[in-house]
Image 1 (tube, helix red, strand yellow):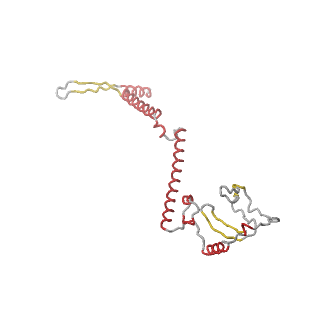
Image 2 (tube, rainbow, N blue to C red):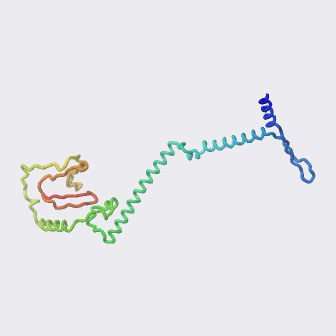
Length: 224
C-alpha cells in the first residue's frame, strides 16, 4: 500500500500544473498566463534535445564534414591523401636535388672543386662534391708518366696481336646488363653482381687508374 501511495504521489506531483502569470506592474492587469507541469517541461526538454541531435547528425552525415570524423574517411579521400603525400615526397626530393645542385655550382665558382673531377652535370644533383675523392699526388704522377711514355706509342693500334692461346677469365659472377656498343660510345660490358662479390682481372696487366667517380663509383682501370 505504501508503494502504491508513493507511486500515485509521484505521478500526481509530476503532472501537477503550475500557473505562470505575467502582470502589468502599473495596472496589475494580467497580460499572459501559462499552465505548465513538470511533465510538460521534461517533455519539451527531451524533444528539444532530440531535435538538436537529429539536426547535427543530419549535417554530419549529409555534408563533407563526415570526413573529419575518426574512422569515417571514405576510400576516395584516402586515395587522394596518399597521392598528395606521394607528390609531396617527390617535390621534396626535387627541391633537395636543386639545393644540392646550387651548392655544388657555388663550390665550382669558388674554386673549391676542379671541373675535371666531374664526370657529368647529372652528378651534381646526386651527391655532394665534398664526397668525391680526388686523385692522390702519387696517382697523378703515375698517370702523367704513363701518358707521357705512351704518347707516341702506336704499337697498340698497328701491331697484329696473336690472340691464339689467350685465355680470358670471367671478372665476376653476375648478369650482363649492358653490351659493348661503339655507336653509343659504350666501350665495355656491364655486369651486375651481388654485393661483396670478388672481382678479378680478365688478363695480366698494370693498374693505371684507381679512383672514385660520381657516375661509376669505385673505378679500377688496367692496361693489358
